[in-house]
Length: 142
Image (tube, rainbow, N blue to C red; front, side, top):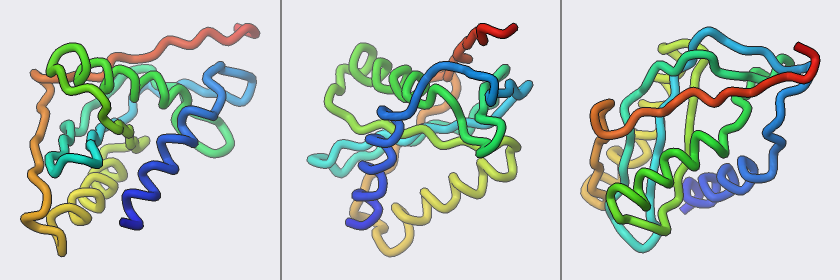
C-alpha cells in the first residue's frame, strides 16, 4: 500500500514539473529508461525492458530526467490506443547508466515478486512491443 501511494505521488509530481529546457538543462548522449504500468483495480502489472534512449535531457543540478510526462504519455498512449487498456497509471524510471537503471528495475521487481509473490501477474513488454522515442527540446539560448 505504501508503494502504491509513493507511485501515485510520483505520477502527480511528474505532471506538475516544468517541461521546457532552460539554462540549467543538459543533454546526455544516452540514458536508460523503463516503464511501469498498473491499474489499481487489476492485479496485472506491465513492465517494459530497460531501453537505451538517445539524446535525453536532464536537469544539470539534480540530474533528474526532464519531460518525464512526455515519456509517460508515450507509454499511456500505447496502452490506450494499441492495447485498448485505458485508465492505467504509468510511471517512467531512468538511470544515467545501465547499472543504475538495472538497480532501480530490480528494486521495483522485488516489490512485486518478493513478499507479494502470486498477488500480481507481471507481464513484460520487450523492445519489439513498445519503445520510447527521444523527446526533442530546443533551448532558446542555443
